[in-house]
Amino acid sequence: MVGFQLVNGLAGLLIVTSLLVILARRPGNSARFYALQSFVLVLIFLALAEVSDSHELYLWSASAFVTKVVLVPIIMYRAFSKLDDPKLGSGAIMPPALSVVLAALVVILCFWVVSGVALPAAAAIKPALAVSLAHFFLGLGCIVSQRNILKQVFGYCLMENGSHLTLALLAAKAPELVEVGIATDAIFAVGIMAVLGTKIFLTLHTLDARSLTTLKG
Image (cartoon, rainbow, N blue to C red; front, side, top):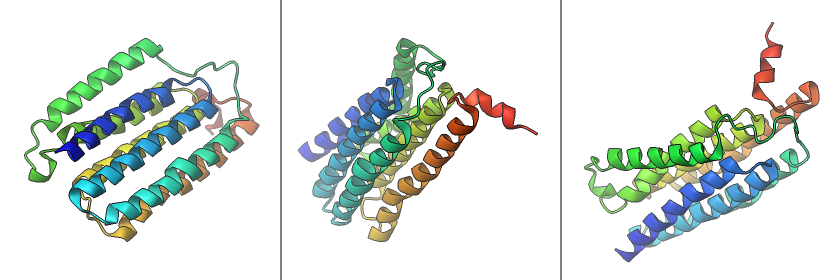
């Protein structure tokens, strides 16, 4: 039972780190907070591996550490730290206080939804499952509420971490090949989006997503 409490407690930290990623003004800081969040995710995988006796999750933890804690943040930091659009500011459509309130409402709603789940495998991890669901919607909200193209990339990363946690909670004994594939997909996705974001900035000299309407024929 203590192990599941640890899993649920660590899952709660993901919401805090998500807000840090979303509210950080500079993409370089968002990359650091994303690395911190991914490290917490790895700790959750290790705790799950212990309580569920799933040796597959140990490999999953190792691959997630290499890809999400090390490689993806390095790619994002190196690609984004030199890109800045002073005219865009933070790029957020809504003020930070409202973002925090909406995030809290999303978490409460997800807890209410998950409370009705009757799966035996989810009985002890409902708080963590609710967080994983809320985490996905926070990432989606980041994409919708940010005008900064680079911050939208981080929104995708948050969604990916949320879906990653959901799978780990409900399918801890998934085959290793599946787990490693899921852990490494972010590298290719972020790499492609980093190249596109850099090209857009060099072409339009702005990171404002609204400027992409100028590319219409």
